[in-house]
Image (tube, rainbow, N blue to C red; front, side):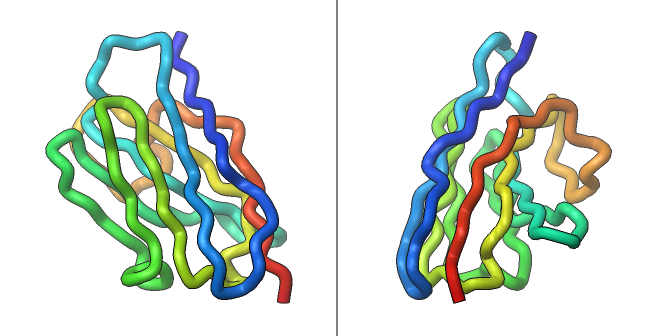
Length: 120
């Protein structure tokens, strides 16, 4: 049973920084890709960043230059800098067995999410 557990969310002032972590347990599979998604109130869930098992990254335009995703085996991190109120959301970690994909339905495993709040 694969489990993804996120940590590191919280309340941070605009312009501040926060680092999220996600560890996958219950599997010896080296996931082909891991990603961070987020869902703001009243909005659809969207991909924030993705990293392949070879270290290739993808970022949404809205976070490029501010967020950095890194990976160590089946643990991933999301370093978030220069946070804005519009970054407020529940952040989810996701993993898939095969090659990277920006298609949400192609992700096999999901964490429970961690709340990030940036007040306006």
